[in-house]
Amino acid sequence: MNALANLAGKKGLIVGIANQDSIAYGIARKVVGAGATIAATYLNDKAEPFVRPLAEGLGAELILPCNVMVDGQLEKVFEAVTAKWGKLDFVVHSIAFSPLADLHGRIVDCSAEGFKMAMDVSCHSFIRMAKLAEPLMTDGGALVTLSYYGAEKVIPNYNMMGPVKAALESVTRYLGHELAEKRIRAVCISPGPLRTRAASGIKSFDDLVEAASAKIPHYDEVNQDDVGNLCAFLVSDEARFLSGYTYYVDNGLSQVGI
Image 1 (tube, rainbow, N blue to C red):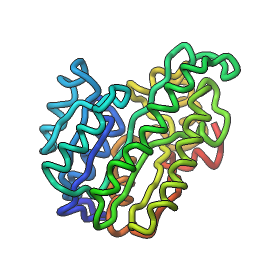
Image 2: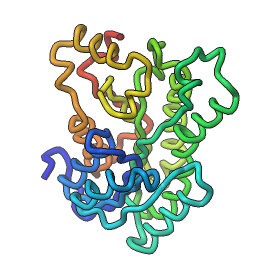
Image 3: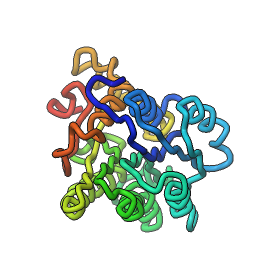
Image 4: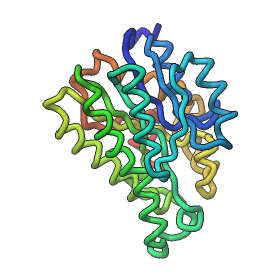
């Protein structure tokens, strides 16, 4: 049991597990370790063989496809959750996407279609999840999303995802305010650079990790489990008065800068 959080009896949906190195999987491990029961999603048929064994190993009671760009698929996930549990205590939104051509180029050169797609998958999908989760969180709940320091400061090669993540952090604040009367909280976790398959899409991402390690002693010891520990606490009743904020998991890197 996680000493910082007791999630016994709580039901949570984890969206974004891709493989054993993904941040979403680190979160899933920790919330299950704290006593929660989870539902998990995978992106598509290609991803299912990588995700299903991980989710089954954590005792996930639902393992469902979820590509937020496919009409109706996100809604079907929540329909399944409703049929299985009839309630929901927390949702973890750990997905983001940008076409590589737009991600690797200057913001001033990005396409309208690429920017729209990045905003839809990385930001607006969190709003959609909040709307679908709201009627299931009859006893209150927590909505969690993942950001990055590039939302606040200019980070080399983070490019278009910077303003997209800034929008996501703003959305988190507004959701936290709008849903407060129903005791539904919204929080954002901002890990420092961690080596994941998703992060590998960012040009010269290894340079960010090396720069962090050079500036902050022991930075390279920060990992997905550290993010998971914080998330387990944030979705627990012990954190019931924390909402609207962005919480950094980076050993102080965000106070120093890349």
